Length: 298
Image 1: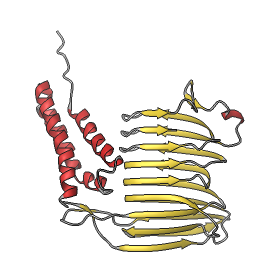
Image 2: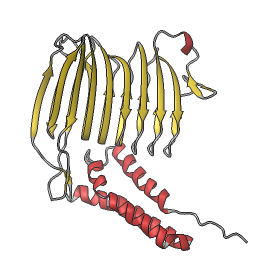
Image 3: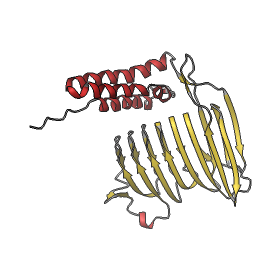
Image 4: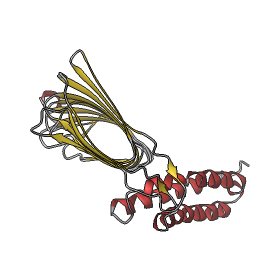
C-alpha cells in the first residue's frame, strides 16, 4: 500500500507571515523601512525549511509546530526589530536636488534602479527639462547622454547595504518628476519598500517594471498606445488604467493571485480585454508575470 504523502505547512506559514506584514504596512501600522528590516531575517526561512525537511516530513504535527513557530518568528522578530531599533538602512545623509536638461533630446529612455525606501515618479509640468528630482538618504548614481536625438537617463541607488546596529534605521526617498513633453521609455526596478508611479500625465510608449519586496502602485498613461510589462515580486502590485484607455491584459498568475476589474476588462479566452480594444486610439497592451504578492488591475 502506498504511503500517504504528508502535507507541508511551513511554506504556507511563511507566506502568511509576509502577508500579515504586507497588510499591516498597507494600513500604515508599520513604518516605511519594514521591508528593509524583514530582508535581514531571510536566513530564518532557510532554518525553517531545513527543520521541515529534517523533522516535519515525519509527522504532520511536527510540521504544524514548526509552521506556528516560524509564523511567530517572522512577524515577531521583524516587528521587534523595527520598534526596538535593531536594524534598518545605513544612514548616509545625502540630500540632493537634481535637474536634468534635455540637451536636445526629442525622446528619452529612463532607467530607475531603486534599492530601498519610498519611490515616487510623476509628471513634470511647465518645464523644458527632462527631470526634476529630489533624493534623500542613500547616494545616487546618475548618468545621462544623448544619442541621435534620444536621451538615455540612468539613476541607480549607490550603497544601500542593510546595517545591523542600533539606531541605523532611516528613510530613503526618491521624488522624481519627468517631462510630459516628449515620448518616454521607462524601465523601473524596485527593491525593498513602497513605490507610487504616476504616469497619467506622461507620454509613455513602453514601460517595464521588475517589482521587489513591498507595495507598488502604477497609474498608467491617460492616452496614447502603451506597451507594458510587469514582473511582480513578493509585495502587492496595483495597476490603474485611467478611464478612456482600452486594454488587453495577458497574465500568468503567481502564488499571490490576480484580481482584474472585469466590468471594464472582461475575460475573452486567454486575455482580459476592453470591448473596444481593437478600434481604440488610446490603449495599453499589458503583460503580467505574477509573483508571491497579490496583483490588482482596475
